[in-house]
Amino acid sequence: MRSVISLLGAFIAAAVFQTGSCVETVIGLYGETIEVPCNNGNNKPDGLIFTKWKYVKDDGSPGDLLVKQAQKDEATVSATDGYKSRVSIAANSSLLITQGSLVDQRVFTCMVVSLTNLKEYSVEVKVYKKPSAPVIKNKAKELENGKLTQLGECVAESANPAAYLIWMKNNQPLVDDGKTIIITSAITKDPATGLSRTSSRLQYTASKEDVESQFICTANHVMGPDQVSEPETFPIHYPTEKVSLQVVSQSPIREGDDVTLKCQADGNPPPTSFNFNIKGKKVTVTDKDVYTLTGITRADTGVYKCSLLDNDVMESTQMVTVSFLDVSLTPTGKVLKRLGEKLEVSLEKNASTEAKVTWSKDNRKLDELPDFSKLTYSDAGLYVCDVSIEGIKRSLSFELTVEGGPKIMSLTKRRSNDGKHKILTCEAEGSPKPDVQWSVNGTNDETSYFNGKATYKLTVVPSKNLTVSCHVTNKLGYDSRDISVFSLFEEHKSKPEKNEHGAEQAKVIVGVVVGLFLAAALVGLIYWLYIKKTRQGTWKTGEKETGTSEESKKLEENNHKADV
Ligand SMILES: *[C@@H]1O[C@H](CO)[C@@H](O)[C@H](O)[C@H]1NC(C)=O
Ligand SMILES: *[C@@H]1O[C@H](CO)[C@@H](O)[C@H](O)[C@H]1NC(C)=O
Ligand SMILES: *[C@@H]1O[C@H](CO)[C@@H](O)[C@H](O)[C@H]1NC(C)=O
Ligand SMILES: *[C@@H]1O[C@H](CO)[C@@H](O)[C@H](O)[C@H]1NC(C)=O
Image (cartoon, rainbow, N blue to C red; front, side, top):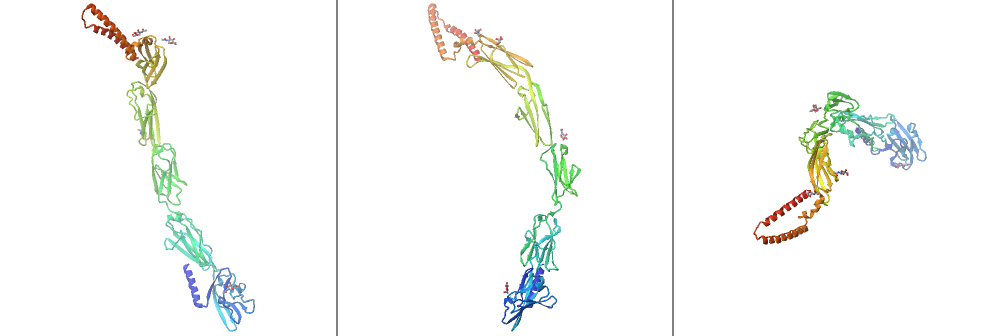
């Protein structure tokens, strides 16, 4: 291509050289009117007789085109060939040739004849035509990685001189290196018009990265700016180098799950069919890349493979582990035990990985299961055991009831804060909750029951000394206990005496009474001494003894009251 242009250049240079400085070259456009000037317009000497345009025919014979007599307005066309209808002369004697074509690429001579002289001026005409926009034809459907492939053929039509084509990849020119890039150009001329068709065939060795590459063809021509073809891209084919098997399902895989295996190959185009190796069994899938195992079980744990249909060596392996958790608890459900009995709890588990166990009683977390070797009422409750591994959780439970016959732990009395009632409290253990029976009528019966311990309260207003019994029963037995309750009214009467240490005033009154009594006794004693006239030191002791017995009686009563 380039050589063609340089040849052309050489030819022009040669022509210029041959004809000397008097031959000028004009360029006309294909299909347009070509103006061939006669001595650059300096062609009207004095005594001008006529101006004549002529040329040399292809066979070497002279060819006259037209003659213009100086004194006539019209020129006479003498041409008989194709020029007959296409030539005319301008006022400045330029030859005008309409519908310029490549046959007009020749030397035209203008002959100026005057009375004194005859001059000839030759002009070489060149007719140029810009090529049509380049087009890439015979495109490859795809390129193969690493393999020299014909990418396409670029064609620029109807040019003169011939266009020069350049292949570009990502706007960088591609250069024939004889190995990975081979560019073969050819120029052919249209026999009718003589216009040139330039074609350039590109053989190209693609790499995987070329999937992004843009190929264009540029036509370079003397007539104007470069013209470019539409850009082209090509899929790059390459064989699979790596197969990968994926387990699509969420981890962990549990028994009963559907598990999808997906096989992928990195070749382009990607393979559409695969062989799956399902624990030793070969399964072929066509036009898809997945295989689904439905309702997987722990027995499906194992090694899975996939490979290319036509190449067993290209394979990928995956381990599929199915998680499972078997748990059994003894006992379960409702468990009935007697107080003091023993309960053995056993939890058996079989899991794919180490299972985590937590216990709770009545929704409260336990650090560990209590010792059930001697059951107490407080051991009763709902025991829940949660066993879990990643993704699986099992919950098991038993509800323990501890039964026992009633047993009264205490029976006490106390006076109400306002001093008007007596409150009896009977505490008993037993399960189911014992029923209570008091031997007296009372008010404000209250009962609480927690952890096998029942507390019964009764408010009474005793009008006389009583023995009250608390009697408790449940289906497993009964128990009973008595307590003495003194009359409130009696206590009221003796109250001033009793409240000795309570009220300061009462103490003073008692002191005064005792003082008066002692004074009277002293007077009596002095009198008695005076009468008897005997000397004794024991009178004081006797006095004290009587006082002590009375006081201890009162103290006892007070102690009772404090007990109440
Ligand atoms: C001759 O005349 C034409 C117009 O008729 C003009 O375009 C052209 O430039 C002239 N040529 C010369 C050499 O003066
Ligand atoms: C646990 O489960 C596995 C798998 O099913 C089984 O082979 C094994 O015998 C089980 N072990 C017990 C102790 O149940
Ligand atoms: C208790 O009250 C009932 C009726 O209110 C009466 O029938 C019963 O005799 C009373 N019992 C005692 C021990 O006072
Ligand atoms: C109640 O008992 C107390 C002490 O035993 C006694 O002092 C009192 O007289 C008795 N009251 C009645 C009404 O029986």
